[in-house]
View 1: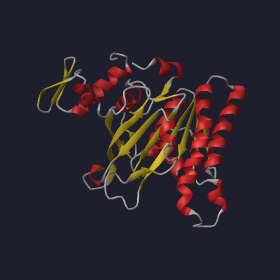
View 2: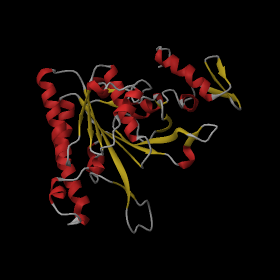
View 3: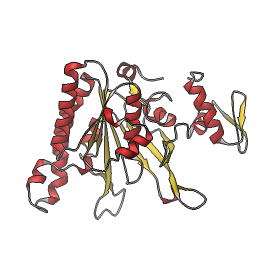
View 4: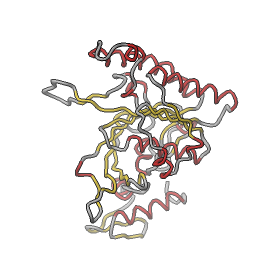
Length: 307
């Protein structure tokens, strides 16, 4: 079940039952409202798609949705194909890191002048591509070696200001971050987050790391790419137990497969069994494939037959 704190502010469906479980501890939960969620990883690991599904879940409940597109790569047509109503999506492309957070704060305050209660869901894609005002004002290459430190300092200031407003005004902020490689690292993990230094990790309530590889691409019989199989792990979580992880499946024409991975999760929890190789069973229902039982479990969750 969701924690009392999360129930107080509500949640937004992630588009995947198993991801809901990883984030909130409940298959019917999702991203918490009132705090920051970071989604970071390598390129082509569905980070922007996760934002899109959060907007879909929010719009289905009548919540406000705001998209900060600092990567200038958001595709309205693809989002609409997945189920976004673009006419109800507040969209902006601020130039700098400071402008992005100023837009977020101003948008929240303006909405709350006329609507005191309806939750607000904000997606910021991405903090790693947002230059500071000082970077924008200087010549190319000047003090570039200090750009990361400057961005981290500014990000920390912005996050300190915005974080308490989310809880006060019932807003959820999802921030996409990128991964970079440190130069000259011989031992340990050379990867580091691109934007915000460690400030974002400190201020977020949940931090999700996404991953996939070339071997995870799904092809049809003619070798045309259909989507990807990926993995996601909660490296930080203040809502439920941290370090939980799950697999996800993304099809390019459909988005996240909501029911994917349910059977394996239920088997791990002891709520479903695998009496023989290749067969799975739940409450007397047996299927020869996990994907078939995924649909059965999904229907039971949707109808309130499973907690």
